[in-house]
Image (cartoon, rainbow, N blue to C red; front, side):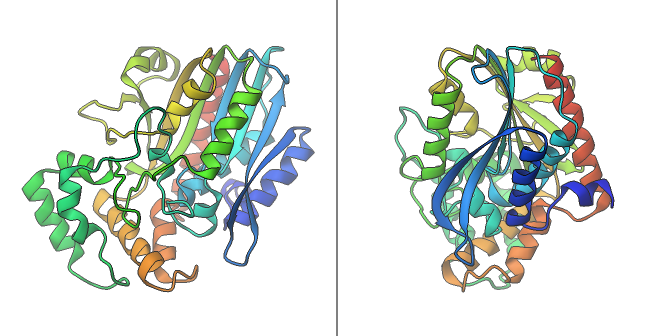
Length: 349
């Protein structure tokens, strides 16, 4: 069995079962956050959390996966690999591994949750759940056709829009988040969703003693194929660059493949644990180009809202491959870089 076969799973339920079993095998403490949404056969769904180290830590390494559902295969594999080679922690530290923050999305092969919400746009504090970029309003008929998936010259239309608006401005307008189109792509919701709300409560309850938190959240689909980019807030760039090296990129840098968003996951820790010093990094593994990624998201979204929505449809499999390439070289690179980043995080804890 190859390393990728040991750690990468074929579906959400396989990943969850392996995670739960391994936590017990390596003497971790398992916490489970259940949500109301169900799998395609009515199965229960949950956010599962493994805890290693002291119960009231001063220092915490927090590793999370699957905020964007279908992107969770890579993060889950890194986490299973991590539990096979657990690091040595200091007596005042804890390692907390959060497995699949959007279980509905991973189970149903969606990027979004049971309410079509992009959870990385949902963690707003005092801000209102409204606003939509003007360009998104103009592009809504193109981004969100109210019809089942069909061939409609997507690539040609996308190319014309890129020429008209420029890729940076277009990307920001489309994927930066919107709060007015509930069936549209990148919808941030109208309230904090059930999973995020319960997760925020978990953090506030169990990390009240924490003084220093290093948080790593794993994503896929952004950047060059098989390479990872480490995205950081501008205010933390110097510290994170010193910790993790040249791969660290400020979110607003010209060379960054990312974009500005509201309600990102990295904003929840200051909300939930305001006394802690938090250093948050997003590890993004590149897969395919932005036009292909957007097309896959668009067609799956059409199938979900205006088709049958069933799990076996080709749009689901295309989306899975888009965020979880099956090439052995890609999966090996994910495991390698996932382990290297965690080693660096432990040494800086």
